[in-house]
Image (tube, rainbow, N blue to C red; front, side, top):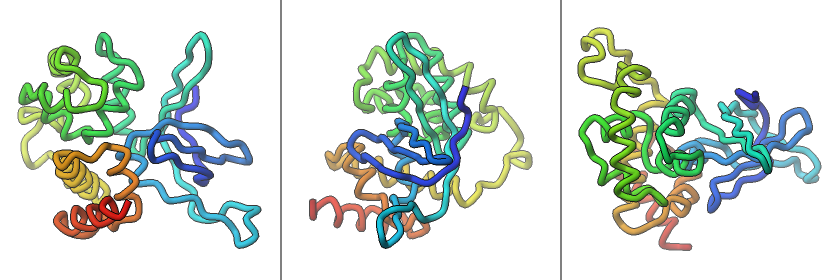
Length: 218
């Protein structure tokens, strides 16, 4: 079982949400969420084009073994990986459907949607119908309470809720910006590509404005 990969990004496919990450000379093809893709650096090569440069990254992975092959799914945080594994434990939810949901939601925003019985929002994920979304809400409630108690109102007193890290704050802004752009009719792959080089430390309004500028040029 491959749990993590640490290396440099060799190729990215924003439309298919697929990356190739080179680790010790071996390139691994990994399907990622749009959220993870937006956090990863673009491939960077030496001037002569023969060697990868740039900072290596670590992604958390889930390896799915099928009769006709092996697929790797990658996540920027272990929290996202854990939520992915909860999703594929829901009847009728496979890895591709789970990736679709987590491309629309962060783990925290998905937990909030499940807690509020918001199946309609979950059904906005590509390939997820109303019945499947309702099943996600039904089967995920207890699982989220058990595995992510800090996401639920009764999971802990306020004094025990950990402060948000910078990456978590950026992830929340990313989700809010992505939701706003989705309402405008853009696909998750278009949004991921447009937000790839945008500074997530900027105010939310600037993130949305800058992404729209990129989208309107394409």
